[in-house]
Image 1 (spheres, one colour):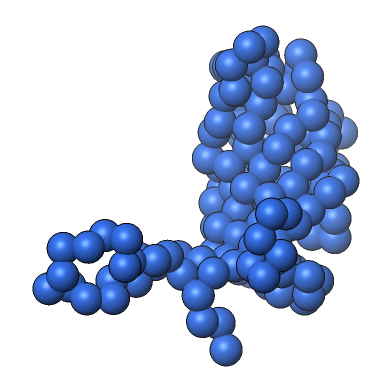
Image 2: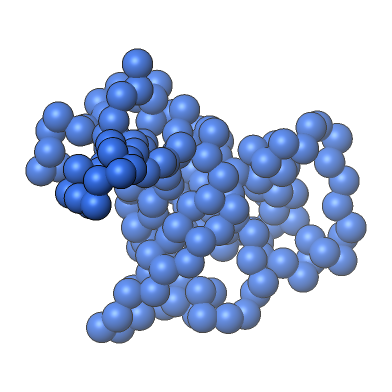
Length: 159
């Protein structure tokens, strides 16, 4: 990381970002062009979980190359130092974020799919006891992104 003063080295803060954020963007390789897609997610242990339709560009690219980069941001805001001044260079952004790398696997075992969905639902506020229509579970894909590398970055006052 170029700006070491902005690096988040505290694993608890990185964990907080992973647990409290709602959207994860995954970047996939599409030959000579990147493809990025925002997804809601669930986080548990060292993995992120997503659900998806079984067809489409995202799934084609994952099946072709399951190595991905991901980004999650937490509580961002534009800080306008002087709203009466027309000097944009005096503004800044307050944020925390993580960027990481990993590999996505398509979960095919029905019980593991439900476990992944439980993690995703719990992350997004659904308490225990989640039930699923078997037809819905059968028709969707559950993805597990195993985090291999992760870094955190922040800017602004977080005390």
